[in-house]
Amino acid sequence: MQVYFLTVDIMAAESSEVSTVEQIIADIGGCGRFQLKMGITVHASKFLIIFSTMSMIFIAATPQWWCVSDVTPSNMTSCILGRNNTLYCHEKKCDVNGTKCNSFVFSGRERTMVTEFELLCGLDYIPSMVMSMQTFGMLAGALAAGQLSDLFGRKRPYFAGLLCLMIFNLIAYFSVNWIMFAIARLFIGIGSGMFQSIHYCFMSEFTLARWRVWVTGFPSWPISSCCFALCAWLIQDWRYIQLLCCLLVLPCLLTWFILPESFRWYKAQDRIDDASKIIEGVSKVNKRPVPDISNLVANKNATRKEKKYTFIHLFKTKELAKTTLLLSINWFVWFYIF
Image (cartoon, rainbow, N blue to C red; front, side, top):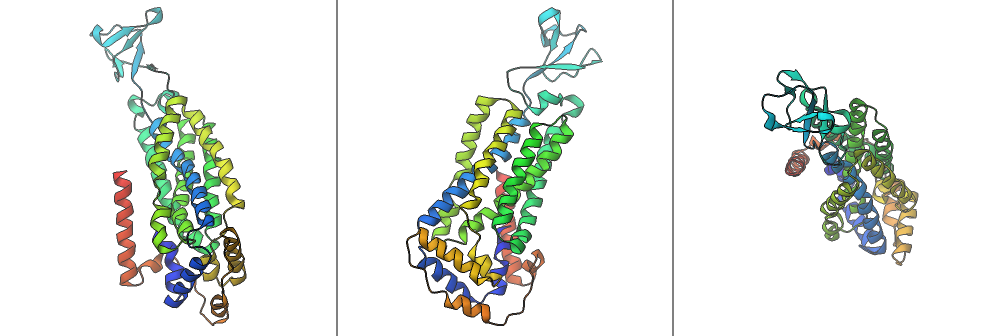
């Protein structure tokens, strides 16, 4: 998906222009204080994405359960006798001597969507379906983010994904049935997909090529997964986990005042004045002199046919089509393994 963000730079810029941008990044610090601050900010926000995505592992879990029945089963060893002489029959037994169970009892103190809505027996397919809906939402969000970031810049779709997560995690917290919860998880997937598609390129466009593998390759996913496992073990209530994911967005939204728009995107849109302001701001943070941007101004005055690019343009040439397909296969395999 990330290859889409390079469409404008590949098709609308000559190789000399690209080298000019790389030189500007080198002049304003390459990988200085600003890039470090941006990397920490984005990876900290990624914790929220991982919490929201990984939470379905706990939320969809099915604890050990028994059927509650007053019917005496033929196999007494498959049941336990509870309070008021109520028989709790063996795990995953949906009927006792032909009588269908109408209620269930669960072991442990964890509360999941399965225990809340009793998604067992004929309804046991629902947790997997909700997880599939979330995954489909991530795919849709990733595809939409490419076009949106090309039209409106990197910053606004980036924060739109975070805002989507906050709203629909809160809606999921107040869910009164599994249908409402499933729709909320679909939009949580969309917000997660938008963020994950944009954040790599957002950081890369402020960093020199030799540093990008370090900036984008920080293992925030496994670290965040371990943190979520600890939180889920401590909380053990799916509603409070949803509320936690919602509240974690609030400090992330405040980073709107820290993260600037990509000056590469401004350059691609011939908004050189806006790009210059971003370059000056980064230079100030990195304590470097403002570089000469006369080449960018010259490109602004050059005549160029304006054209809007879409996902289809990634297949216009053999080289772009090959790169797109290879990256798509790479991401598909990565998510499949995960």
